[in-house]
Image (cartoon, rainbow, N blue to C red; front, side, top):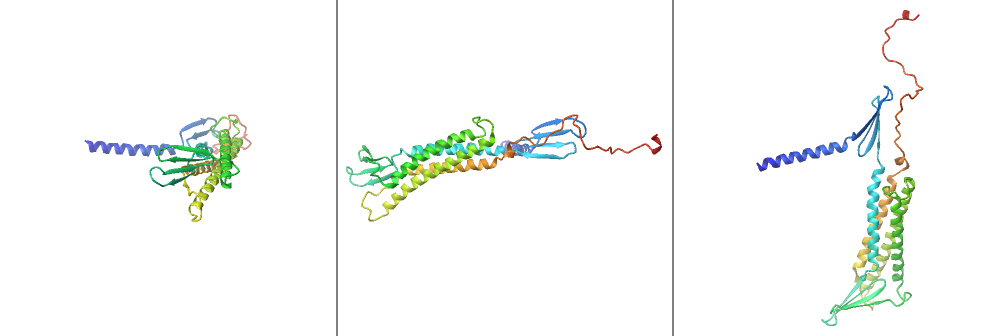
Length: 291
């Protein structure tokens, strides 16, 4: 009995997959018929992917909803850009941009960690002591540049979020001028890419100096290793670059023709036609019937 139910369930699942596939590709999800004479009668039918029109002669023309492809891409791009912007904001105040372990006995062992703004130390008892850098001009050049680039990335990400919210097709902000909204969305994608580039340059430059000092046998100072703040920054840059690229791709999917109404126009009743229609029925009258 159990085996029979399994076979029936498998067969029912297979039939449901087949019928779902057939339904997905069927063009007649909704239909409309405009009745007229033999010439102007037409049918319009649509599904999830296209809209088609068929005239009385059996000739039909189909048009794909290409603009619908851009909508999920825009939503995904906004989510990626927003995630990158949030992670960039998390990376800036993170204290573990570089970490150094000072080995010793139980009393003297301690850990030193730094970021763009301060240097901290924690001893073996778990007591933290942080001190901000007293002078910005006394810092290394790459630290100052990384500060500026990270702040610029936050600003660029903010502009990118605003432009994307205005330019998305599903947003009512900015009216229904979809051509202008597409350009604004593309501008948001550019801002996201700039955000990702600023973050990527900042964290990569900082990590390069860490590795350069670590592998330099003549370096007299403390040798640090890469901390978790840099990994968060790299993730932030990757998400922002992916979000900006998706926005630019979504704008490429949407052209001016996508936003125009359907080109097929059904003639109304009583529409005059310039072409003459010749009857194809046979003539049963002879010449002598006409006087």
